[in-house]
Image (cartoon, rainbow, N blue to C red; front, side, top):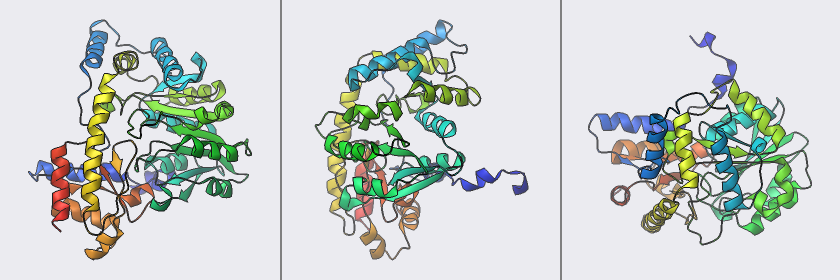
Length: 391
């Protein structure tokens, strides 16, 4: 059957996070008590006011196609959000809505990348970035960072990796999988490099914008240096901040020419995002925002506990996160102590012997690490740490 498949699909790796989740679910179906530490979605319920907005939309006939790039009301709410939260001005032709934040990134890659183009992606990275670049026939250029530099790309690394083929630079802050956050000074230093290379587009993945406990106001690279706005794309969505992962609504802002091209791609793939989910997202952006504060407070408490607990285990080095709901410890000492091959084998060991679902760091371009998601109950976190401490 492989003769029927395209060459491009062979280049794409299966999602490690989905693979771990599938295996964990299969074990759970067999009655195995799996502790879920791999999933990147809040364990909170979508707020009631958002649910009610969706129900109202269904009852009032908002069940037909919308504009490909989203309803007028939702696009206006997105424009208002960028002004309110980020002091950035956009127009109707500079924003679009998609079926999740992932589709914004995919649309962008398809709209701007050609064969031979290069995309700079700091590692650790979100698992889908490189493969979506590959699907656009471009080449991901992975720049390794690590615990010693707080998982952040330096201006020197960025400068070294830019060449005439560089088309796009990806930055994600707060980060999945590390929870690292770039400061204003760090972003301005990166911006200084990028200003010398006007051919390079920038995408700022801000999906975890509201999930932070570093006591500093949120800032992205466009806010740090507004001169980059004319060649920057901002990716965001309602999945993480409003516990709406299954609703599948993401959005982006960019220069009109780029949004127009991304809209063209979307029109020939999914067309418009779900009309009901758009109505729910409208309420999320315009409605009461206290739900974010209560969730973040819970994540901060869980973060403090899990970091301290992991650092008490021989062979684990776990830096503090600043946002998102992940920690990304180095486990090379533990791998050696258990006489295992690598982080992939370690994650399998944890699933099969300790019944803990984790994602290996290799999936994020960082061998020797593992991602813990604390978007789960404190009880689950305590169980996972106790099982790890027992080995």
